Structure formats: C-alpha cells, structure tokens
Amino acid sequence: EGSSSESVEGSGSTTHISVADADGNAVSLTQTISDAWGSRVFVPGFGFPLNNEYQNFTTYDPEQPDNLDYAAPYRRPRTELCPTIISKDGAPVWVLGTHGSTRIPTTILETVVNLIDFDMDLYTAIVTPKFCSSTHYSQLRLEDGFPEETVLDWYFGGVAAVHLLDGYMIGVGAPRDDGSAVGVK
Image 1 (tube, one colour):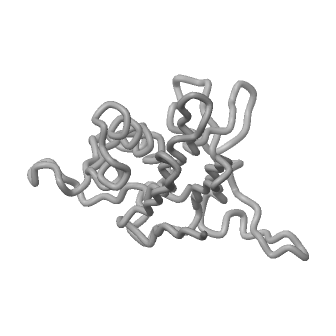
Image 2 (cartoon, rainbow, N blue to C red):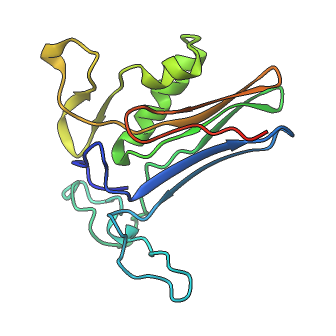
C-alpha cells in the first residue's frame, strides 16, 4: 500500500481494477504488495513479487500505539483495502475501489456518499475533492478544491469504477493519476 508520502506517480505497490460485463457479473479487485516491489522476493517461474505486509500489524498495547512493525500475540494484520460492489435489488449498480494506502477507506467512503447521498454522477463523485485523517499524521489532509488556506499538497487514491445503469455501463478512471476506462463490445 505504499508509504503515506507517495507522490501522484505513487509507489506502484497497490493497484485496483473494477470490471463488469453484460451478464451482470462484476469484480472489484484491489491488490497490494505493500512497499514498492513488496518483499523483493519473486516467485520462481511466475515473476511476481511477494508482499511485505508482515510489518503491518495493529497493536494491542496502548503504551506502544505506533509500533506496527512486528507480529505478536493479540495483533492482526491491518489493511486499508476496500474493493466495493454496491447492489440494488440483487444486481450490481456501482463497482469501485482505489489505491492510495491509508487514504483508501476515506476515498471510497466519500465517493459512495457522493453517489448515494448527494446523487452525483460517477465522474463527479470521483473527482470531487477528498479529505482524510490517519493515526500516522496529526493534520486533516485535503485535496485541491477546498479553500486554499486549508489545503495541504497531498495526493488521494485514483478511484476506478463502473456504473451499471439501465443496460449501460459507464466506466471512469480517476484523472488524479493514469486511470482510464475501457469498454469492449
């Protein structure tokens, strides 16, 4: 999931794809190797790296809230991944997810709120400025589009999504990075 200081180019450690087909099948898939190139150990004969999530464990000890670097009793692996499919009457309506490390949950939550509560179209819901907070830093972080005096120079995930609407599929890849939508007939 990369470090919390990744740039717009990102570390290449987390990717997401949203897919839907004409038969109503849908997949939202987020994959991470944690830091760029993960563990730097590649599976022989297959060429992909193993992740290095072993260092990402929650802490049970309130005296050491920032120590997430080892496995121990009462700890569990933490993750911010949240591939999402929203259905209505048993059929998928939105298929979405993003990369973005600790910004993933808030980016997806804000996008879903924009879609459902504010009735935005998919593109507007994705490009509307996002904000987030984390236990890793003390400030609320805001994207461009908020009042200038409150904006920090920070990058938020690149949501990839599909909206299934009345027999049509609308795909959007976030313009924050190199996301895109492709349709095949």
